[in-house]
Length: 271
Image 1 (cartoon, one colour):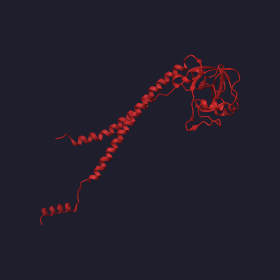
Image 2 (cartoon, one colour):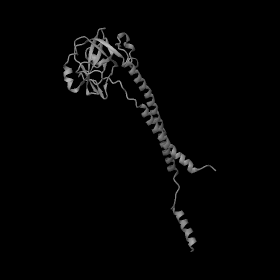
Image 3 (spheres, helix red, strand yellow):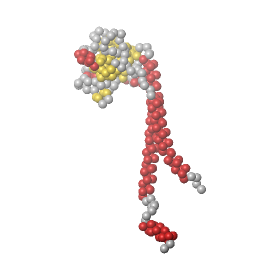
Image 4 (spheres, helix red, strand yellow):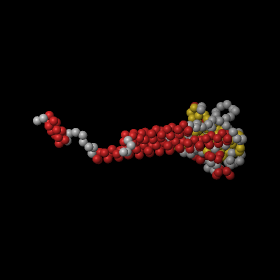
């Protein structure tokens, strides 16, 4: 037999025995297409999520700039009398918080409420004491900050100075519920937020109590509590966060587009 004939016989044998390249089964090709489609859809969802987070950060930036401007205007405004009962229904954070107000009256006897706090002076407590104003209603006054080692001293103190007092400070809104992952313990007198209603109830004050509290300004007198530690400066990094989210959205969109562009180039122009 000639070599050429032998070669043809070998090729025919290979074809008959099924050795050599086989077509990809249609089922497997279908699964591959579905997988690619799912990945593309997930990628598009990621682009939308990142872009949405960027837009949200821009909205937060607008809110933060408004807050900064509002607080700056209010803390430097002339002091006014703290709002009385006739205005309590209208009090909102947007309308009143950080207003520069004045109280005149006497602190009520009874235990202080110590609220856990972290300030520029370190960890410790806010000392909240109810004051009955000369106008007849009660306001919780945040007299200031004490360090941890002063806790026992102010737990024993019975309701602050007894002499009439005039307090200038910033109006603050109630902080109901407690702190992060910590609820206020009203029966144990353990406080993680300045919850006006709960603290007033713990003091037995159930009527004519203002729905806000007042952060006292720094006193000229040395010692504790230390007032004037209200945070009135706010970080505003929302533009950086927004640009980060938009950059992630753009990178993911490019990553999705590149395979499709490359596939189109490989196919070339239609003939």
